[in-house]
Image (cartoon, rainbow over all chains, first blue to last red; front, side, top):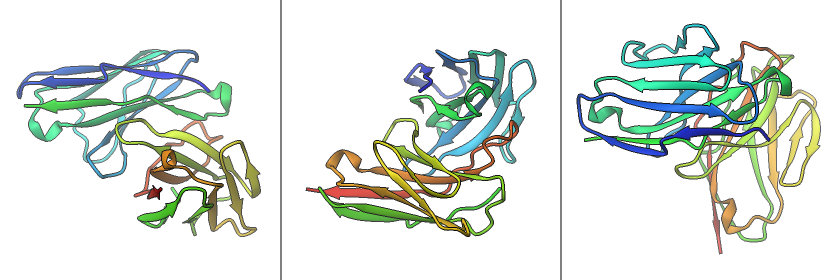
Length: 116
Length: 112
């Protein structure tokens, strides 16, 4: 199956700083990428959907000015958590989808963010 | 988007067959049923997808009755490494604008 990578796999940052998470589709061109957030013992929550070259569409309740998403190419999307706070500590997972495989969605390994 | 309902948790023993049922009463005509597996601190992994009747691959089988209002993921002879959370999702994956919304999932614990 297609492979999605994320970098970093884990990051610790101080409250008030910003942190960027990269999501790459390694062997396919992801026309659409998704960002999810997952708190301990909970399910994945969809944050936003982004299409290459377009602005991301955020789910209700997700602050677009706090979670900046850029999908500049068919193989790279980034999520920047701005002015991070401890409550932003979570597991962030991206996924990519391509029409080449009937829109099957492939997930990255996730990034653990801890804000101190 | 069709909502799914699954048992919160299940227990099993090594070597047993495990069947996890998912209810999706409002499934639409063009929706497919997809199951994902997730281990702690990892992204979800695709297990199997189906539209109707039965689908089988090297790791699982998926049974879908004629009315498609439910589906059952069958894991033959589970091992300790099958301990994970299993998510059932329904969506029209052929629709370029669809998005996967995860429900609560089923926590499967396989005991020695």
